[in-house]
Image: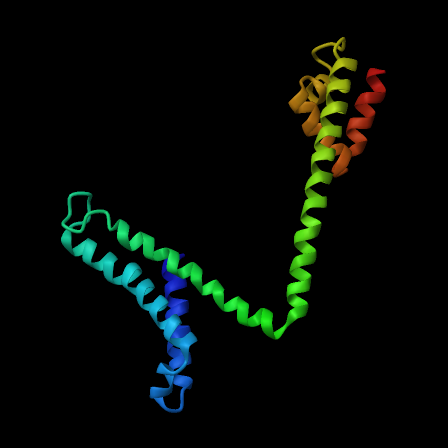
Length: 174
């Protein structure tokens, strides 16, 4: 996967370089210079260093060590996300959408916590209610323990994958 990303970014860089009418203009474009540095470090790390490590013999006792300095250079790739700031300046509606999603994330999280709590409470109740059932009944398989009861309630009660089977088992046991 890393090879494909490197190939993609290198080809993107070549296409952008070819798009300049005068090749000297690429030095005036600060984003292109920034991307050039990122692509150069990516190519050095992915292809050049891998080739050198294979030729030298790899392993932990090679003369290059574990190349931990170059692993730190991977963090430079994250700075590619800084280009998104330019996009946010051009389209403020996109920033409004992202802020709305971030605000809704908290509500969705607490809804999931409440759902988990309710499933847990009902799982404990179903385990207690089905405690006296014989071992060979199918209800013990569904509600024999709290984790299996939670699993049954989540899949068959919330998502409604196959509620008919569970309802018929509950009807037979009552």
